Image 1 (cartoon, one colour):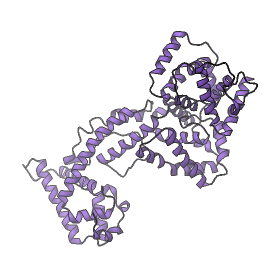
Image 2 (cartoon, one colour; image 1 turned 180 degrees about the horizontal axis):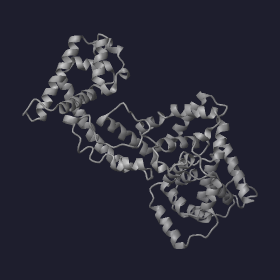
Image 3 (cartoon, one colour; image 1 turned 120 degrees about the horizontal axis):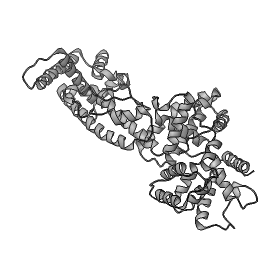
Image 4 (cartoon, helix red, strand yellow; image 1 turned 180 degrees about the vertical axis):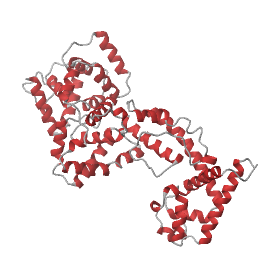
Length: 466
């Protein structure tokens, strides 16, 4: 609704008002700037005290208009909380002032009370969603906050007389927490952000996330399970760095050598270049993970300014390894997984294939491969076992390390005169149809990688073959 009076109120910016005492701060600033007269200000204050009297009568069920000082103060805080909630729901401070001028405090309070009750109901639903989207990690603060932190919080919430008070026990930090908020409004924004972070992390292999957390703990020589760290920030950061290296967004493991390679790659860039690279990487992650939810997209994009600035500072000081969470030597890790040992027996292999057929995503299948397959021959057999389909091949190949891909290159080129990824093909090979499918998918994925990474995989293939 248009109102000519709004023009004169533009002197006040909402961000300049103290959010923890929004109404009182707004009244003080409006009076100071002569937007509200002394008479208007005093009238608003009288209406607040009248509302307090009415709430006390309701609290005592009409039996008394007086209560203990502590109780009266608590009810007054509840009133202010509801008034604040309603006035803060407007985009601009001038709209809040216009509301104070044109609506009674009783009406504003009732609107705010309704908002507080709505927030509580929304929080109940949000908590159920957060508990459903919870990822399987051993971080204590994360688990206890989700599992126990809100126990009884909403059932005990008393919007009528203690709207400002909640019993939530929150230890786990979300990335963009708003500490200026309080009460049920704070709980709502917290659960909303935690749900977005869970949704993002749920799109990546849980084995990669757990490995990342373990590496983080190792770097700082602490048990990560007892640390107050934000999983989303660590995962998104390494996902961005992985893309900058030409890897998949789902591959969170980064070696010290790769970190050094990225340091050299970024060294000549200025701050604007770093900002652009981070911005582009986030958009690539959104695309690769098929993230269509605008709220999650915007939440991820909000991270780019902080990371780009931090990235530039570390590159300038030539200590990017302090920012990137690096892992142990890939070669050691991978040989343990794909060493040439005894193959699975037929029954075990059949059970594994059936288990993979029940999986709903390539990420789930990749997790099974990582946890259950200990032999390269079994891995190659799985690729030909009619349990991986279409784009799932590409997703799985994108989550493999360079040395794991190098081993597949050796298999693909075993009948070729020499290893050459760019000229590799399945032509003139005596292969089954299933073998042709996975090898063509692998060749296609390899050719889509950056030149530097193709060269590194080729080098590893030749080294292993010797």
